[in-house]
Image 1: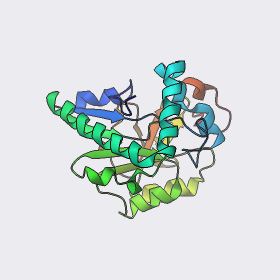
Image 2 (image 1 turned 120 degrees about the vertical axis):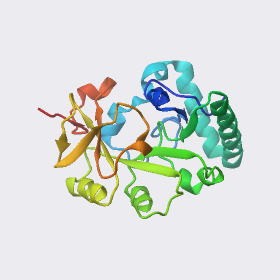
Image 3 (image 1 turned 90 degrees about the vertical axis):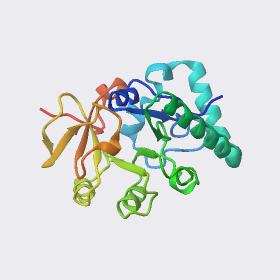
Image 4 (image 1 turned 135 degrees about the vertical axis):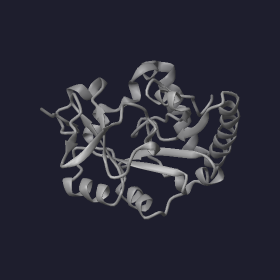
Length: 228
């Protein structure tokens, strides 16, 4: 049961920029018995892309649950296998003559910066979204590994002043919109986050605009911003 995959529809968009993303899907929220998304809101849970694409398949869901239970029951064994797969992915990227990057929280929000994974590969780029305010502020303060990029993910529970504070400090905030992206939101420039998944290439202090997908198109919680 491999832990990493070499991309989905969104992450593969980065290949035209010379990057190949290796990502990991775990079972989000409490689907495997323990919460791996501690700051997820109701809107986030409802719009989660866990069942998008191949995620709708029963065997895929079972594999994600199995991986998540392994992470909790045998942390050292799980991390050892993850490091091996990262090393193998580096070789695969080299064969393809592409730049490797890693997103370990495709459907989770775990503190990989404290698990001796990212720091074990300091020459290579890791990135994630997070809804955990403390993690984001540690990133902005420079307390996370230099090769780890975080984008804060807005939910219906995020105060507007927090969005402004993060952007003013040079961080980026991802926000989901119902249709075409506005040029600005809350007076802050909006960039097209659907162009690729390579968040570490984004300019600083912007809103990363994402279009509602799947179940998110029917959101009524405020997670999705209904722009005119």
